[in-house]
Image (cartoon, rainbow, N blue to C red):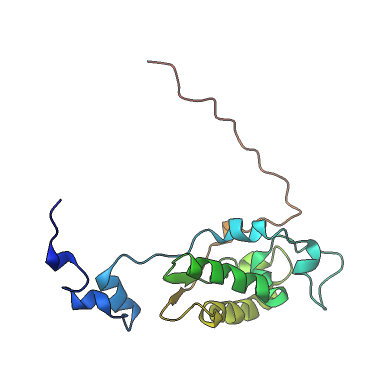
Amino acid sequence: MSHHPEASASANPSINHQPSTITEAARQRILILDGAWGTQLQRANLTEADFRWDEADPTRMYRGNFDLLQLTKPDVIRAVHRAYFEAGADIASTNTFNSTTISQADYGTEALAYAMNREGQGWPAKSPTSSRRATAKSAGWRGVSVPPTAPRPFLPTWSGPSSAT
């Protein structure tokens, strides 16, 4: 294999400096977006108490409303951002996929949607490893939130590929 000096970092000065904007970084290389938030938050083994706050309705269940963690357990959110940045992500999404009044109505927390979005937008920037990183607002749609009181949906069983010719 021959060595091409024009492909080395020393021959290409644009590789040797930190990009000043996300646009400049995207011109230099493929950028990496963080990964699945749901699985990261499920790994935290959170309990119902982690989703509660002083004014929480004692008759409601909030576990599984991960957007609520911006307000109740911001350290968990910061830890996920930090882990993704340390793993090499350039862009961190906010944990606000269901921070809409429509989705939050499932939990009776629609009045907190604004606060969830306000707090959620700042966590990636507050990460100690966020220098020269970007934040992407995560916005979902109504059908994603499944409240803890909802019955499990029927999931058909896949029997494998059809043997019919």
